[in-house]
Length: 146
Image (cartoon, rainbow, N blue to C red; front, side, top):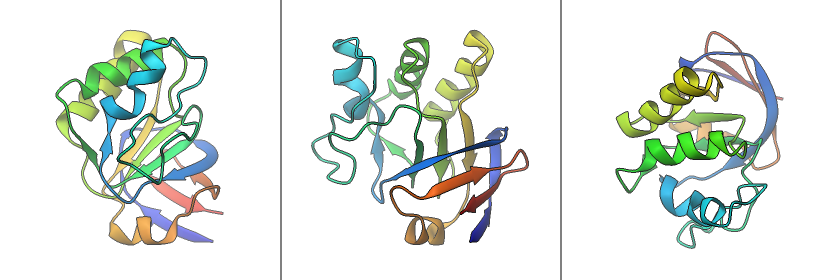
């Protein structure tokens, strides 16, 4: 068991399966095909992200360094939440960027739907967490790798 402490952006208690990318997460490229196809599950369509490409992201705990890419990132997060295909949580090794934060916060405010989000977990977090690990997130930003 390994414990990390980050800063909760949207707090809550949740437990789930990790999906990990050690490179920046392109929100639009990752969710675009699922949005266009009105899919029942979000399957990563970012061919440049070999760690996540073709993997189901719905109801997973996405463990990423940060988001990258388009200015549409916040809207993409809001859209996938409205479609009910969002991840359970976002865990950021680095600080969250303003676009991802906007989408996650607007999802909470406008849709009354929480995507638990913690940032500033540190680089070691992505060195330790592995795909398929059970991750438990606590209300105070504590992340436990079980």
